[in-house]
Image (cartoon, rainbow, N blue to C red; front, side, top):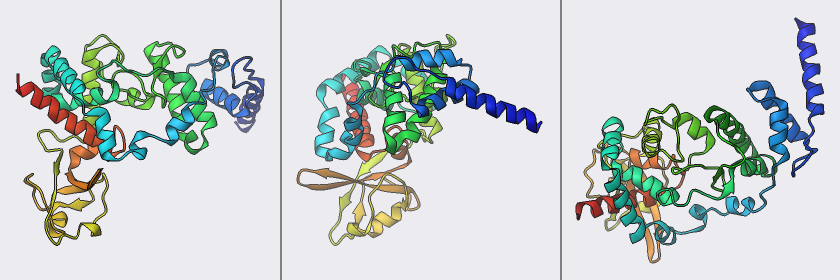
Length: 330
């Protein structure tokens, strides 16, 4: 057995050295060669398949600045909100609701995730499918996996997940376009999320987040359910700081690390009725004239699993409320 294992190791080493990417921007890279060999060893891909794919990759140099300066970290709330909370996005959300009311209701009844939340996610992500991204997903993931050291481990995993995904779904990895970070389809799932949470709701044998509206709605809802969405519970509520408050003693964030009684004891009030032991987060949003505070509940935290930012979650939540209000006006 020992001699057999040694033979396998020697064979593997020989194969690594045999990899030859003839074209593209990643030829003669030892780290790329090792990835290809490992992927061929562990999956249904053959070495020639992967060499051909990698030979056509073009390095996406423009990605680095985008990843270093995401809007969620560069903008204050009053600037960020203006990007997403617009009449056109609200109206289009209501229109999408009218077009797919029966389907959205069916998904809500099955998952407990409200129609307006599902619509707000795809409204923020892609303006209801209009802007799905223009960057080549495969080239982007290769670039970030091998030339973006601060997050190379994450993007290496996503590259592997992407290659497995396209094999499973019979997709062409060279033609898929998405966000600068490799998110795809109307709901902008990264490859690992696609493989973990995408749902074949229309029953055609494929979870299609590019063209199937039933699959898209159900997959967004499933993502929330799997991350702990609580049906028929609140998401967040604005806070009022009473006189002589001690809000400066509390640490804002997205995690529900406080009890509601903690916020009350520090001089905060909300019209949202909460049990004293309810787990909450103190959410801080910077307006032009000062800070605005909200209480974030479990469902608010769930929204941040889509994008780990209080700005993102609040934009989704407020857009959802405005879409729902628009529907009530009809």
